[in-house]
Image 1 (tube, one colour):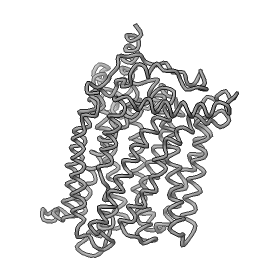
Image 2 (cartoon, helix red, strand yellow; image 1 turned 60 degrees about the vertical axis):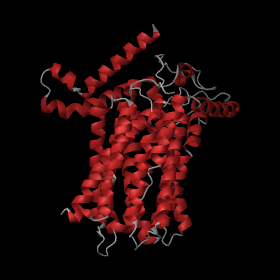
Image 3 (tube, helix red, strand yellow; image 1 turned 90 degrees about the vertical axis):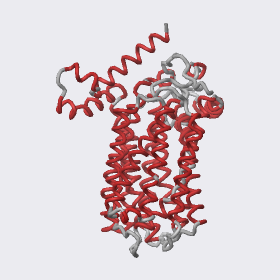
Length: 512
């Protein structure tokens, strides 16, 4: 009986989602639809999310994913590349290695998750961490922008501070997303869609303006813009809606809650339905080694026959890529969110490996033999890689959300994102090792094509592990029953933390 009631509730939610999102199947019955219905479709979709999840939650997603990650992340990517190349004047392999340090805060996401779950500040578990992230990010960006002749060590620490601020804000909003994902599993793909769309829109604005700021203010001055997004996190921490927890005996329960959180993570990770997809996501990211810095130094080098792209053009190409990333979000949201995890991740990874051949064609200058100018070809390559990359990433985010046990959403989602960050860290370290082994420097790019080829082959090798991914649909509950009906961690507030857990049939992969 409980299973039937929950299935009916989810079916009703899905119907509401389709109606609010302007599903083609529904629009035909409403009579007409037409262009006006299509124009208003995003508005109805956002209104539905605000009604179901809360307006301040949706605003928080837009601020964190759109401004802090999307805009700041894209702006930082272009400005920091020029900062290390033109201000600090280091080799590409060295920059690739230094980027590992910027990923350390993301590897520490379980720590931030534990803090947000079990260390409330004056009764609040989310708002204080938004405030702290905002202050830290603003101060770190101001130091880089205002101090001339900043030593490399101080610059690295400041960049780590910026990255830490983004990571803390990310894990805090992800905890909110994971909790809502437990309450309303049918809305998980929609939540990931608004996250990805906000990120892509912010990235579009960041990339479109980054080249202009770098050109007119210089790389160091342009990094001063990075102080604005974290400043907005301060306002988010002041205004986002959150129920205040009961503070009695909090100090006595902290250690027990930490122990329970760590123990819960360890127990959850023992389930094959959890560790298998986690392993696949790690391999998918770790084997996709990064050769970005080598390619950046090459296509911004002014000496022939290198492309010698300008700062404005580099930012504009990335901006066009951000538009393509938004197209990838729309493609996923409209056509791919109902496909099983294994099917969509297999074809997305296959396309990801094949699309990397465009980089190889560009580095080898074969595009000129085909009569395609550098500017046109690199724009097409960026669009293709962004669409495929977004379609590949979004099912992984949905899958990660589905693996979070009730009551410790922030902690466990942070653990999964930590695993992903370790994979990306390994990819950057692997890329740095390949660039150094092939002796790709600031001026010598003779073997850059070989580094790109190795990267593409490693991307395709991930397909051998696709059986680790469950065959369940993206709206299914993946966790076994005993995890879903477990009690919340000790000390959790009954009104805020005790979830109405869905008792559906277990969707455990047959290969588990």
